[in-house]
Length: 372
Image (cartoon, rainbow, N blue to C red; front, side, top):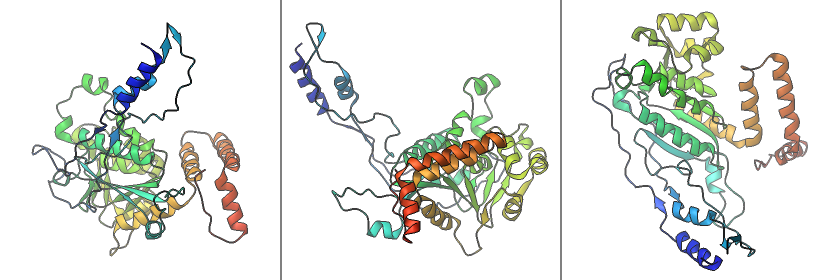
């Protein structure tokens, strides 16, 4: 085949129909056999769904684009046209719908009014990605399907240049009542070990952007562990936290014994893990597990989103480095941590945002960060 014929086929493949995820309304499907250590109940999600089309370049076109041009067994000397390949990663776009979560991107009112017009070079920034767990009949029990949805959506939002912060929440009745016991109860050691059960949950803690948890109602077992994977926890007065796995003949398996001790200290963490006792929001705040308990008349989700807007308004490069530095404190000695912090601080002097931020301070104006 000649180079021109191969390039012609490549162009034909490039015009092939794109793969589009099927559009459907959000569905709430909960197993009627789901069992927990709490009585069943129904909570109401805080937000409506924002449907977003997800498209990918066809794999056939990608294969054609990546195929080298050859002539008589030798690479062609003809210059290749510049081609921009679209990612076929399934996490490149939000799905049209998720089975167990609701996803929404929010922007401050001033950002919506002053958002760039079509064709403008200035991109919109400062948004908050709001993810709501949505298995109300199961008190948002963390089944495998829910976590698949959660990992996908948070990864997309983490890669979204217009979003600077994520907020994770549940219903008024339950943030998450724990892992789905009916799904786990029949597993044996070989299955749990071979599949490295719960290993994928760590993806939430690995997100680079700041993640805030807005907790109402029960955050028990896996729900408490999920909240602790977030960077900051805000709670309503109704929030309840606990690691009651001991009552089921097991122990926390998604970070409860490790993150809880770093939040509240050994003695209090040991008491919660060994007794399965549940603590209220006020004690959680006193113990250091929660950053703030909102007022009785305040909506914890709305208050957390407001904080998210503040976080997202900062330089994204700086906020990501700040998160990296704070989290590193758990893994390093003080000397190592101080050196790591200092090197990150030094590196920010290579960014446009450092120049803009300090210039704005000296000129007594609001900085215009560009996340660069």
